[in-house]
Image 1 (tube, rainbow, N blue to C red):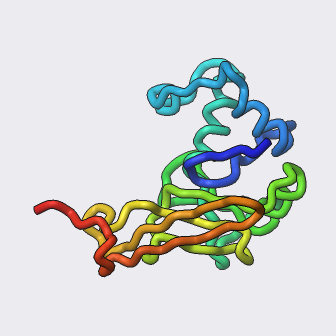
Image 2: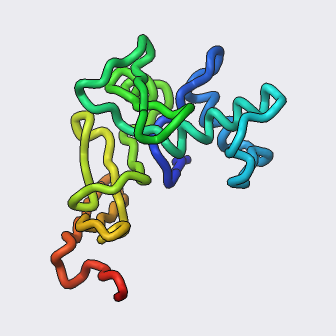
Image 3: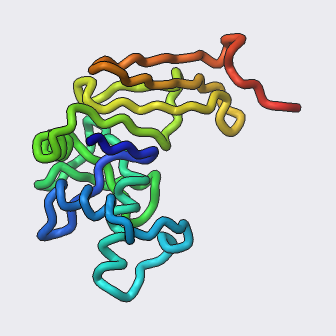
Length: 166
């Protein structure tokens, strides 16, 4: 059984929860799926747990090497706003070890070539939209099959890159 997500990265486990428990909670059938639910903290402890996990899953980013991390391997993420964070190698290693995953393949962050590997190749960021918001970034794709990962990058100046309509 494999889990897949189009999002940021690692959900930070709230106090008293493990990474594995967090993934199990995210997979529950009654986990809310509506965008408006994420906008503001709710009144119940369960709603706040759901919100924290969803925000972490959607908006966490790999920490730049110069980021000050806390004892769990997480740091601030000022580019994403309140209640968001970055994850460093210690948090990544703990997540992979506890969950049995080998890599994090993530999105939600434009990269110049459409792809970027970081954290010793254990985190792959893929961004599928070239010329995002008028930028000059390329597009990327990831294909996983038979225990192999193929990374595909289409640079913005390629004839295959999507061009904006004028």
